[in-house]
Image (cartoon, rainbow, N blue to C red; front, side, top):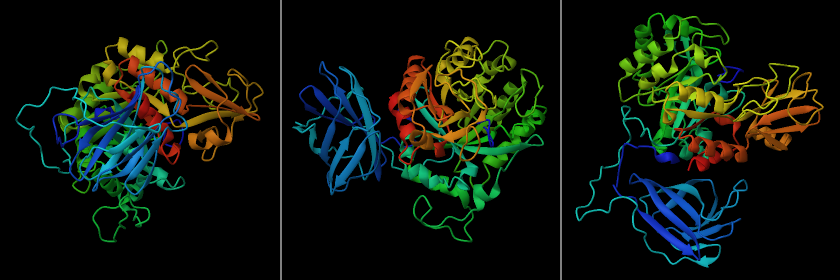
Length: 536
C-alpha cells in the first residue's frame, strides 16, 4: 500500500441484527445548545449510542461539558471523539483537544458503546445547566400500534450482506507484519477505541504468486500464540486450539464489535507481481482466492477480498503489460466466484495525470463488480526523489509549484468520476504517516534536499504518532500539513487537515474514507476519530 516495506459509520453501517425499526432519541437542552442521545444500534447485550451537540445560538460554542448518569445495568465500555470519565454510574464527557468550536447552527457528534440494552441517560447537564429531559419525535416514519419486528441478537454469519452502499465507510488497514517490530496487535484496535469507529478492516497482505492467492506470513496470520495480556478478550491461546495468530484475534474483535467487517487484501507493493499471471487465467485465480479466504479454519473471520494490484497495465515494483481489460477481468472472476453477498474491493493508483496510471486501465469497467474503489491518494511525493523538491505527499488539491500536475487527490477523484465511476463507490485515502527529507534550508514547500530524513523503521517515513511530538506541523498547503524541524522537512495529515479532507469527501458525495495504516495513529485513535467525526 505504501511505497515502503510491503507498500502497499458512523456512517450507518448495516449490521446483521436490527433490533428496532425506529431510532430511539432522547434530547436534553440548556438554552439554545442541545444534546441529543440516539440509539444507533442495540444487540441486547450491548449497544451503540450517538451523542450530538447542536449549537442553536448566534455565537460559536468553544467548549462543552456533558454530565449524565446511566441507569443500572448499563455502562460505557468504549467511546470516541470525546474524552469520557466516570465515577460509578456518573459520566462526564468533554471536547477533545483537537476539536474545534461549533459554529452557529452547526453540530458535533461523538459516541460510545455500552454494555446491556440501550437506556436513556438520566440527570443530564450541558455546560453546567440542568437538562430538562424528554424524548424527541423520531425522524423516520412513526411506529404504528403494532410494535416493530425484532430479531434476536446473534453473531453475524460470514455471509452477512455488505453494508448499505449509501453509508459512509471508515476503512483501515491492519499490516500483518506490525505484530513484530511495531508491537501493534489486533488488541490495540480495541483499546484505542478505533474498533468502534471503523466499519471495515483490511488485513494486509495475502500474497499473489504463480497466478494464485497464497498465505503471506503463516506465523503472524494463524500460528502465533497470544497471552491473556495481549489478547483482545483477555483469554490466552492454548497450544492445541485450531486457530491462533491475528486471524483468531480478528475473530474475537468482531465478536466484541458486531458491526465490524474484515476484508483480506492481496498484493501490495511487494506482492503485486503475481497478478500478471493471474490475469492470464482469472477464473483459476479466483478459485484459489476463494478456497483460501473461505478456508474452514477462518471463513467466519473474513467478509470478502480486496485487490491491491500495483499496477495493472503499468509499472510499480515490476511492470505489467496485461492490457487495459486485465483488471476488469480479474475483478469479474472474483465477483462470480465469491457471489453477491461478499465484499469485493480494490485499492488503485491515484495518478490523475494525463496519460497516467488511471488512464492505463479500465477501472470504470470493473466498478459494477466492486463494492468500492480506494484510490491511494498519498505517496505522491517523497524522498524517493532524494534531492527534492520538498512537497506534501498527500495534497488534496493542486497548488502553485506542485512538482507534477495531476498528482493530487482531487485530480484522481475527478478523473475517475469523469470515466464513469460513481462518487459513492470512491473512498478518499489518508496516510497515517509522514514523508520527509533532510538537508533542507527552506521552510516552505519547494526546497532542495540532500536525502531522506531519519525514520524509526525506514528513512523518509515516520508515523503520525511520532511526528506530532517530534516535528509539530507549522504550516498547511493544498489541504495538508508540513513542518521544518532543524534540517528535516516533513509533510503529513493532522486531525485538522483530515477534517478538511472529510468535508471535501462529503461535498463530493464520496462513499467515505480509508487509511494506511492503524499503527501510525495515536494510542487513543486521534486520526481515525477525525475521519469518523468529519464524515458525520
